[in-house]
Image (cartoon, rainbow, N blue to C red; front, side, top):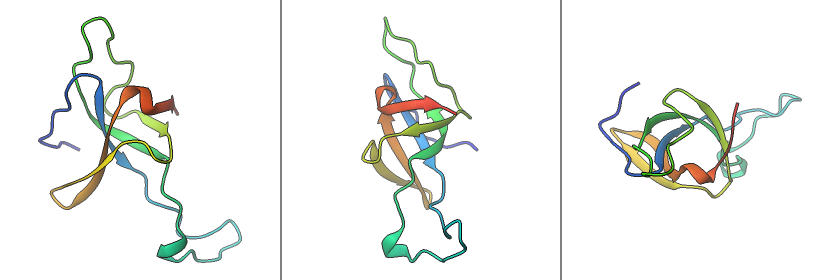
Length: 91
């Protein structure tokens, strides 16, 4: 997956995982009730700051805060751009 966006400094571009379509019991969740995903895959990273290199890399699967990042639409796909500090964990 390659996008023509290069984040600056300590920012990363994340492709969010799709929202759950069904519950564990098989009940279909309508669009209005779907939770915003909090997991995604990093598709681009910035160079980091001079004294703070980034610890994540392209392809990492990450967990982030529910309200983290800014939503972007690039070539018809939805992404989030956020600071590395908004990422809680690599999974």
